Structure formats: structure tokens, C-alpha cells
Length: 412
Figure 1: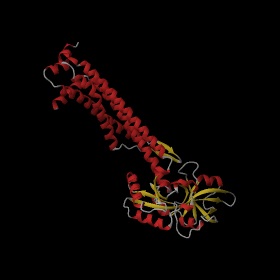
Figure 2: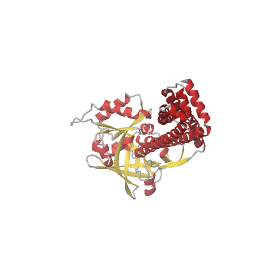
Figure 3: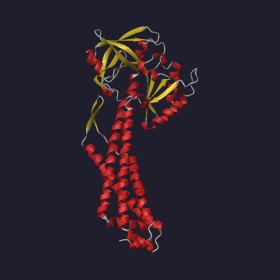
Figure 4: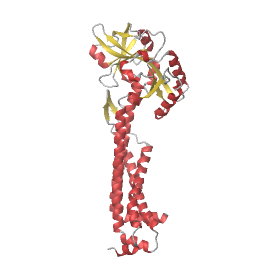
């Protein structure tokens, strides 16, 4: 086998110009695919991080039917005290959970004593919410980065539209489950930048204030948001928690709880899917470049070396060895193109990071591109190139191994 490698490498060097041209095509393909995968992967991870770490959490637990009616923020589908304790006890026993935050979500009327508008409110325990959504504090563009009882964080567009400033008194009026109306005065302690675009109207108050406004005799919550220590275990943890809570059934024999990952809750998941689809098609283009380049070179090599192949066959070289010789040539070209492409691709990503390219995402301004080359991407792209190179060599190699020695020697 070592002799076949020597012969294959010698043959590649005999046709340096063609070998370099083919290797260059493969290299260019690898470089741009690696750069695209790194940059798009960086943008995707940033987008997911902004969505999950600023408001959603990695996954959420609701009572069955709540998410289907979430636009109405139904209070009759809250998690009752017994169900809440069951969930809290289950989460406390899971070592992979970094933080969790119970929330009461409800709609209300926001008044500055001169004008009134609607608002969506989240009643939270501030310390638990800030651990579950650590980027929430970065959205506070004015005011303090904390939240006390009697204080409210309001979205910036609402503040501008209503002319409300820090420390202004406002009133929140809401309707509870029984249909009665109650109100409470708050002080504006902070103004939030929206994480969901211009339409974001979510404000935050202390969960005990929410309980008081809604006249809840016992603590009920709309959802429990969860942050994991390792985001890559998201689906596994969602399945595990779902299995642990599946024993709790309602009167219809269905599970009381529903577990939803951020993918089920955010429309930005469609953008993440589009990035994955684009990456897939870019990889297909790389496969096409390698396939056509290697096959073209190997076909030319076979036709130019017909007499040489005939001579090798005439002295007793088995067809299998002739086939292996040409396959090894394609294999070596694939390795060469992949290796050089990986080095140049990593260098290109490093240079892009040096330029500190910035872009905007939603309401987040001046986000710096931090492209990262993942070892698994390098491995998968390199393996793909090498495998496709071998596959592209098979047809010309098979043709060479099937040649009749006498006819090949007569070829002019």
C-alpha cells in the first residue's frame, strides 16, 4: 500500500499545474464554507442568546392549554399552589438547572393620571428573574438595575408615548379571575429597551405586587422559566422534565403540565432554521465543487495515461491495485485541499474578528461579530471533502482498472 501512495503522489507532482488548480478550487470552497459556517453560527448563537437570556429563558413550564391561549394571558390557566410546589420540587432535584423563575403574566391598564393605555405585565421575583434571564438588566437603559416592591419597569416606547419619566407615579388597573377590578400605584424605577421589536409592551413588577393587584389568596403563576447550565442539553432536559411531570394528570387523563423550549415560543426560531438551511445548501455547493473538480482531473489523468495503464497491466498488476492507485490520487488531493482550506479558513475568520465588524439585531445596537471556528465544523467539512474526493475518483479509477492491456498499449 505504501508503494501505491508513493506512485499516486508522484503522479500528482508530474502534473503540478493541474494538481495545484484542482487543489486551489477545493481550498477556496473549504475556506468560504468554513467562514460562512463560522459567521452564520456566531450570528445564530448571538440571536438565541439575546432571546433566551433577555426574556424567555431556555425553556418554560405551563399548565396545559396556556400557550394556546397566551395572547389573552388567561388567569384561569395559572399553575395552582399544589402544582407549583410539584414543579419547584422537581426542578430543585435537577443538577443541570442553573436558575428558574416563576412569573405571573397578565394584561392591565397603564395610567399616568392624564392618559391611559394597555400594558402586558410580568410579576417576578427580581433576583430569580435576573438569574434566569441575565441580559434583562442590560435592557434597562434608564434607572436602576433592580426592582423593589411598589416599583415598575416599563418599555421605552410606552414611556415616550405617554411622556412618563423615572420616578413618576403611575397606576396599574387589572381585572382578576372573578371579574372584579383592582388598581395599585407604582413608581417608575426603570425604562426597558424592547427585546422583541417596536411592538414590545412588556413591563415588570414584583410578583407580590402582581398577587395583590389580582387579589390572589394564594400564589399562582402563569409559567416557570428555566435556565440550564449547558444550553446544548436543552432538548434532553426538556424531555426529562416532561417525563418527570407526566404522572400528574387532569380529569381527562392528560398531563397537567406542558414543557416548551424557546423554539416553541419565539418566532425567531424560524430565522435560526433558515440559517441552518442556508448552511446546508452552502455545504452542498462545496460537495459539488469537489466532486466536479476531482472527477474532471481524474478523467483527464486516465485518458492521458492510457498507455501507461496498459503497461502496468501488461506486467501483471492486478485491476484492484490500478483502481486503488487512482483512488489514492483523489484521496491525496482531497486531503491537500481540506488541510490548506482549513488553515486559510481559520486565518480568514481570525482576520474578520480583528476588524470588529458590528451589526444591529432588533433593538440591540452595535453588536460585535465574534465568529468562532468549531472543531466539529472543521472535522465534518474536512471529512466531507475527503469522502467526496474518493467518491469522485471511483468512476475514472474503475474505468482505468477495466482497460485491456493490448488495446491500451496500442492507444495513440
